[in-house]
Image (cartoon, rainbow, N blue to C red):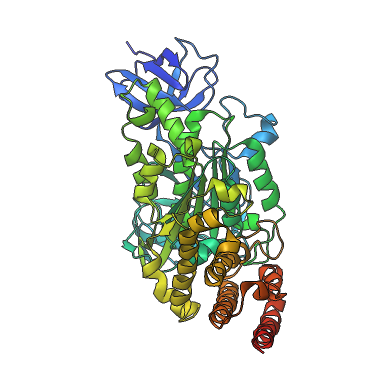
Length: 582
């Protein structure tokens, strides 16, 4: 007698199903009459625990459970760019078109458009031998992204026929001599990293256009960075700004447990903002994974893997991908809630004992690599994860586990945020372990003086830290002119260079060449000021200079006018100190 799988027990998103003979870990099932999507996360005899990715209200014991025999996978192919998906890759615009503003329970539609035709151009011919990773043909997905149709995993042989022309993603683009059909789309299990031929060292920075990041604490292309900070310190704004301006071919932004209004604001900006690198709409190279705080918590756990799998797909085309997750703390909270439903032994602060390994597995999927099947090509995934430690406590488990995996650490500071200093990156505690390996790139692309300029900038900020206690005790008026000059130097660097507006039309993005010019001028003024003090000039005299205000407003000067402004400033700088000297 055949036993039909059915629900035995419901505990939040964790559903216990019986009569599950032959099921396997990770298998996707459909629970209840609404066929809610779920994934098997534990098997005990003929009983399986299913993590349901939707609201389980209404499910009851005895409801049917339908097995699919598939793993939780994403659909990969043309049409991903510009898309907005939920945590399990259901297209939100398509869901809204069918069911309105709220996702219908059990809603299932195609992840990618089956009707749209793409101009497929083959790059192989009959008789060519192909295997996993080989490019069969190309599709112009956007004006600047050429989508490469690659041989899926497990397929290998000699091409018998190959198509050409306008095709849908479900159409066959090539047939091998053994009868294997290759389509424009493929599927991939989100829990399994896509293979890479060789992992490469991280030698090149990913330029973000943010001076505090690119100058002091750059993230390597293919590296991993974390942004820990309490509420109101600007994590989301910094991630959104990097998403807009990062020097990457493809941007994947994951709103993991974020407020819906923030995701709506991000989408609204992306539909209007022009890409500074291409001049086209930024949305043309962006994919959004939106699993907001009002969506089912279980799908939040899957959203991170959905995003990184899509990132690996574009990496395998040879592109530089920047993946931003906001925030990994809410992802960890989803793990904690699911773990408690399974009655697992809790670890520190109630998080599962495997929290660190899960975080490590995620960040390990970042990297710069040679592509499987095409060793001459390289691609990269740079992962930037925001962390929201409760009360700004960076000793909590999620921050510490992330810190062990990331090579770049941007700590956001409450005090700086309250001073309206954005980005509120604390230059005393932040770091970039990859910076020394990238210095050769900076010397070649920016200038041979760059390492010395960075060392000087850190020294100026460190000197301010040393003098801060003295300043609190005696006040600025009681300090010697040399000490006042050191404090003024640090103030100029902080307010004129490191502080940056995310909304100013000129200051929001700063190219690395512009950064070099600005920092060089700041240091030139500081050197002139210190030399003047050593010659006996008072800081009161130097403070009268109109150059200080011009220097602080240098970041508002357009790129086209910057060279002229710097030349004029240097002339004024020389004249001012010479006139005082006389």
